Each structure stands twice: as structure tokens, then as C-alpha cells.
Image (cartoon, rainbow over all chains, first blue to last red; front, side, top):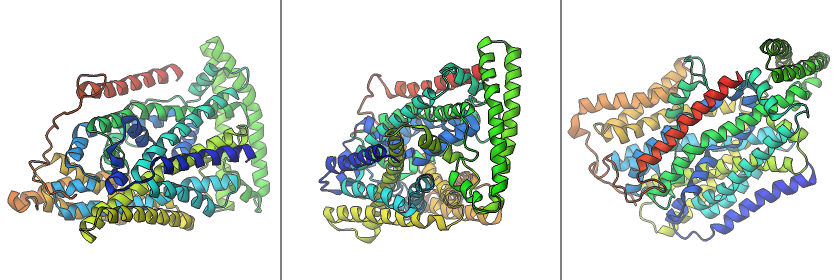
Length: 567
Length: 53
């Protein structure tokens, strides 16, 4: 990192934090602190929703995903616009009519206190763990690439977020997210321009896209149906819809964004704004990854993108084997150079035979390179058994560090930090509001004044922030932690969604029935987790369906009267 | 601020619209815009996939 990069990075982040604190100073009541005085306009809400969803991993992993697997990941978001419409029609009007602070508050109106508290607790466990990972995941990658101290990187992200989130609450989160989104999209567009600019002079932008297509990276839509294929049109329209409904409709970190709207219209427009722009945004990020892939067809890529892991192997007795693989990798790349220019020339002739021949030659070398990369991964596992052999998360950041000029490296790092901070801020804000509104104010200290709850909200925001930093600091001690947190999330998410689905759409089922159904559903999910081999992503579906089915059966046996709303 | 309301009040009926969306006469048109944009993007992506495959 050069001096200019430090100035850009610290200047950008410092400006956002100071602006957030200054702009939202003086929150005097809990309404202002947790709902931003209901003053947010639709574009602030829309950008805030997008910034909350876009974590640092979005900007680190998504280009790497496109590098490895092409554009098809964008299909995962096809269900999102439909979910935005459904939530705008059915969910937001109910939240607005009841003037709730949190999504779980509504559950008491619809069912009873115990169901509300159960859903709030499930959310707190799940999101509390996720907040630590939101900080840890980019910190571990940045500390590996840049040689920074992991604990200090965790502290840097966490403390910056705590400063403005504690100070200004929901309003500070939304206000800063506008700046953060501008930095994120501006930085990514500059990176996209630079990668195209760095292509050889003989390769135009059109050639680059055509090459990407011939190498299987422009696979944006796939209508074929396959249960085992994670990303196709059908999984996006069903699984993507299901996930978007649960995330945007029941997760307080998103619900808080649109509850801060000036009116029902502003909140709806904010969500629909996300429905219009989310897919193009993901397309752009993936396309930048594809351009990085094309760039590395003409410039030698590293043998393994996580250089730190590779260097660990060089420090062992397996160094000679790694050197031999490096030589094979270089030789194959030199062969590929000629083949790639041959493919570009053939594409310009529109001669199908010449294109097919050039494509076959390139494919043959690509397959040979893949064998070498597989050998490298096997060698890494042999030499350093604990090391991660997936290096796609390092593709984009290693390109940034090696090729972008001074100043732009700082800007791209600001993109990653901004993304980490925007997601974490929403999480801390949601955790604090749920703790105060659904637990503390409702069941612990019921009759305190407004100032007391405002102070409690600030204290809980800081406490959740501190907990997230501690969790992020010790995260590296646990094996496969990110997957562990995803599993924990899946264990609870389905049940929470099931409770809300019943609340919104199955009027027949009442409070007692849904509460027992939720406990049973959670038991079923836990059984599946501990005693079956079912993939954890299915826990979301199982938990949700179980709540609805059990709820209906229990309600049938309890009868309408016993299950009536406790009022 | 905790409200306990009867089912009738929290019923899932369409809300009376106090506000109108900008540019359109009704929210229905706005929703069709979002869904139409989705259909347009999927069609565009399909064309891109076909052209560059």
C-alpha cells in the first residue's frame, strides 16, 4: 500500500463516519433513534436496502465466482423483484398500519407475546452470530493479502461502525449507506473500466466479450431443469423468491430500512427500487469478474491466488514439487498466449471452422491448466492440511493489488470496507432495536421513560458491536466457521419464515397453535441436523413448511376457540 | 407502544391507499413495471447467452 492509497482509504472512510455522526447528531427520543423519525425518502431507503444486502464478501467473492463459473450466478436473484412486489402489497401496509418498530412486534398483534418473543430470540441468535462473520470474513482475506494484523483489522471495521451506529441510530445507518453505495458502485465501475483498459491493444472490448463467451463465461441464463444445479432459471425463481421473501420480509436488518420511510409510498418505492436495480448491479459485478478472467487469458495469472497459502507450502519440504508445478503453469500459459490470439483472429473472420479449431486448441490448454491447478490444491492439502484450497475469494483483490495504480487500490479497499461497514451497521441497529423493543421494553423494564429506552438502545448497539468484534476475533480458532454460521442461520430462518407466513396468509391458525408448531418445527430441524444427511439449505424449507403444517393440524385439534388470539 | 389488536384490525385486507405512486396512476402499474423489467432483463440475458455461446 502506497501513501496515496492510505490517504484515499482513510479519507473516504473517515468522511463517511464523520458525516454520519454529524448529520444525525442529537437523536432525542427512541422513535428518532430506531425509526429515523420516519423521515427517509425512497432513494435513501432503496440504497440502504441494497447496501445492507451487499456485504464485503459480495465484492470479494462475486467477481471470483464469475472468474470460475461465469455469469450464471445472477439467476439466483431472479426471484427478488417478485418478492419486492409481494412484500410491497402485503407486508408493508400491515407494518405501517400497526406502526411497529420491529417485524416481531407485529406477531404479538397477530398471535401473542410468547410467539413474538420466540421469533425475536431466534433472530437475535442467528443475526448476532452473523454480525461477527460480516466483520471477520473480509478481515481474514484483507489481512492475508495485505499482511495486516487480523485482530486490528476486525477492530478497525467494528469500532468505525459502532461510532456512528451508536451515535445516530437508524438514520445514521441509512445516511451513511448512501455514501457507501456511491463508493461501492463508483469503485467497482472504475475497476471494470481499468480491467478492460489493461487488455492487450489488439483485443477490443467486443473481442473480450466474444472470447468470454467462447470460454463458457457468458452463460447468463439456463432454462434447463436440474435438481443438482444450484444456479438456473428455475432455482432462481423458486429458491431465490423464497429466500428474498424471508430476508426482506422477516429479517429486522432489512425491515428496519423500510420502516424508517416517510410514508407507505416512500417505503414501497424504496423496495421496488431494489427490485429494479439489484439484478443489474449483480450483473455488473459478475461481468467485471468475467473481464478479469479474460484479462488473465492474456496476462499470466498466479498459480494459486492466495499467495500466503502458496508461500506456506514453499516453506515446507514440498517446495520442489510446487516449483515444478509453477514451471508447468508458466509453460502452459506461454502456449495459451498464441492460442488466444489465434482465437481472437478467428472470431474476427466469422469463419465457423476456424473458430471451432481455435476454440478447441484453447480448451485443450485450459483443461491442462486445470489439471495443474488441481495438483496444486492437492499439494497444498498434503503440505498444509488445515489450509483452504478454494482461492476464488482472492481473485479480484489480488488483481486490484497487483495491477491497479496508486489511489485506486485505496479506493477499491474503501469499497470492501464500506460494504463490510454498511452490512454490519444494519445488523447492529436491528439487533439493538429487537433487543430493546421486543425483549427489554416488553418483558424486562416496561414502564420507563423515553430517555431510558433511548439510552438502552445505544448501550445495546454498543454491546452487540463489542460482541461482534469479540466473535470475529476468535472466529479463526474455529474450523470452518462460516459454514457453521450458515448452518445455524438455516436452522432458525425456516421457522421464523414459517411463523410470518402463517401470520400473513393463514388466518385460520392462531397464537397457541403457531407457537407449539414453531417449537415442533425447530425440533424437526434439529433432528434433521443431528441425525440425517440432509443438506443444510433445505432446513429453511423444512422449518417453514413444518410450522405451517403442524400449525394447521394443531389448530384443527384445538378448535377455533382455544386457539383464539390472546388479547 | 405495544399494541394488542383484534384480528379484524390486523386482517390481511388490502390497505386503503392514501398515497399515490409517482409517474403512475396506481400501484398496480408500478408493480407491473418491476415485473416487466424482470422479464426484459431475463430476455436480454437469454439473448446474450445465445449470441455468445
